Image (tube, rainbow, N blue to C red):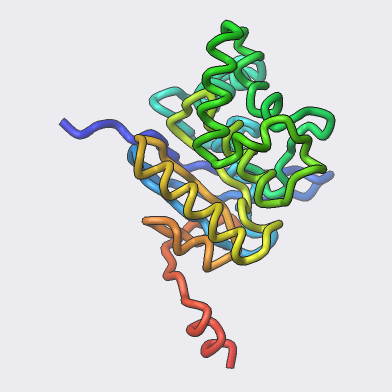
Amino acid sequence: MQAPPILDVRSVSKVYRRGRVEVAALRDVSFRLTSGSTLAIMGPSGSGKTTLLNVLAGLDRPTGGEVLVDGQRLDRLDAEAATAFRRRHVGFVFQFFNLLPTMSARDNVALPLLAERLPRREVERRTAELLEAVGLSHRAAHRPDEMSGGEQQRVAIARALVMRPRLLLADEPTGNLDTATGEEILALLTQTVASSDLSIVMVTHSSAAARAAREVLSIRDGVLGSTRVLSDEQQRSEVR
C-alpha cells in the first residue's frame, strides 16, 4: 500500500480583497509531495510564491481548497492550533535568517525546544547535535552579528530541523547569499534529505537553487504549472 503524501494540496485558491477589488493570488493550485522529496517552486516577484508558502505553513488560510500536512488539514485549524502544529511538524527557513540578534547560535536553535518545554538535558543534546550537523559547534556561543551570512543561514536551518519535522519550507534560502555560500547551503539541504525522511518545498526565482530539487514547478499569476530549469549558459543563450 502506498504511503500517503507528506503534503497534499487540493484546489487551493487565495483571494485578497482591497476595497471593492478582488485579487486572486492563488488559482486552483494542486500538487502532492511524497516523503523524502524536494520540490522547487519557481516564479517571478508577485507570482504567488510567498502566498503559497504561507498557506502551506498555515500562516495564511486559503480562500478555498484544502492543505494537508502529514494527514492534518491545516485550513481547519484555528490560529493557536496551527501555531502548535507548525512548531512541531513544519520547519521554516527564511531568506533573511530571522535569528534573534541578542541570542547566541545555541540559544536561537534551542528556542523551539524551549517553547515545547522539553527537559533541559534534551534541549542541550538536540541543540548540540544540530549545530554539529551544520558544522557550527565552534560558533555556538556567537551572536548573529558575529557570523557570516552563510553561518547565520546554517543556524537557521539547524533551528528549523531541531524539532525533527517531516516537512521543511524554505523561502528563497539562498537569496541573500553569494553564489558559493548559496551552493553550500543547497548541498546541506540535499544531504539532510538524503539522510532522513524529510521533505522540502523551496520557493525561489533562482534556476541554480531549483536545480538542487528533484522536481520543479512554475507559478505565474497564481497558477501552477510544470517547468524546466535552465543552466546559466542556456539562460544567457535564450536572453540573446
